[in-house]
Image (cartoon, rainbow, N blue to C red; front, side):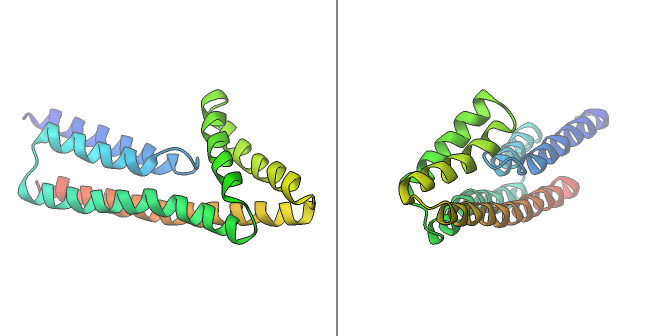
Amino acid sequence: MPTWLSASIFSITLVIMAVGLLGLIVPIFPGITVIWLTHLGYGLVTHFSTLGWVLFGVNTVLMVVGVTIDNILMNAKAHKEGAAWSTLALAMLAGILGTVVFPPIGGILAAPLIVLLLEYLRQRDIHKALRTLRGLLIGWGASFVVRFFIGLVMIAIWLVWAITK
């Protein structure tokens, strides 16, 4: 492969991974999955070596952990503060629909508003509803920090392989 093509593929891959990492700011944007898919695409285009496959396997585990921990942290804190699981499921749905209908901030606004509204209607106590909302937002923040760190590690792992090819 010519050097200019290799450098172009490397640069494009790094930019897409950076978009995935920055996309983690939007709670329902699958940034970790974007990073993982980009690693896969790079490996398929440039041909995986043995080290490439091993590091891709590590990134696969990190991607699964990142996607799972996201849902656990966001919902567990809100549930601990009193949110019903049905409220959290509807908030996730509202977040997805909000992002589709009013990208990119629709989901960011819809999910917390649904939690506040449904918990107020369920408990008839604005203070309890606000406490639940606070739990969701704290979980959201913790989730972002963990996912961002995992994304950085995934990019670093890819870089180790891409640079040592």
